Length: 225
Ligand SMILES: C[S@@+](CC[C@H](N)C(=O)[O-])C[C@H]1O[C@@H](n2cnc3c(N)ncnc32)[C@H](O)[C@@H]1O
Image (cartoon, rainbow, N blue to C red; front, side, top):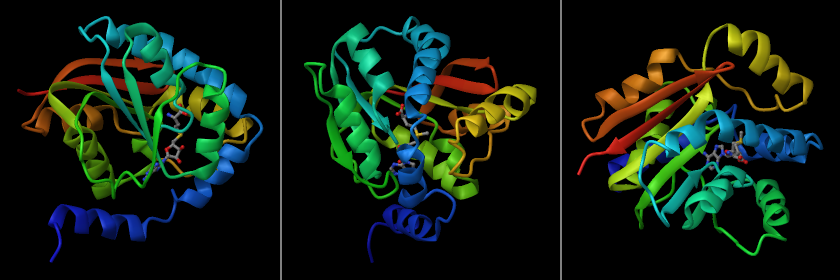
């Protein structure tokens, strides 16, 4: 018998229908992705920059789960120094990422893996994702959150951004994704309290800040010592 946690993850990975490598390769083949990348700048201004003002990190080891291009992680390194590890299972995302970092005098470490199968060899000062957890539901969603915590060092930080139910999502975030032709992967927006309760119910984590903007929610949390 293998590790029960890993067995559960493998079972989840094998049953997954709506968010597979194939769906994500189709997402990254869209030629509207540069506009999507502009969206990362908006997320940076509205969420990440504000969260990073609340914590004291220098030269951190950063892990981005479902990191795609890695654009937001790069902004973090510009601000705080440090190193980036990106985990993603889409070949096309990696190609777009290589292109993005080509002229940057900096390259991230890129791990090709399903986040549900990745074994935690290293721990990180900051683990984050944006646009990942809403593609999983029920048990998958819980495990997806738990994966962030698993890779965090003691006293390390976590940031998760995802769309949330409500008018902002129905009238702004969802139509925008559709217009851009980026709705190739199904998603279920989070209930406003879901993500907060993942953090609050986990005995290893404490909530530091929650922000809601234009149909998205972001949480900043810390792993206990
Ligand atoms: C909406 S995109 C977000 C991309 C990224 N945050 C960025 O700025 O470029 C979600 C990414 O998560 C990846 N992804 C989704 N599920 C995954 C999984 N189980 N394991 C690894 N990567 C996954 C997809 O391939 C995709 O690149």
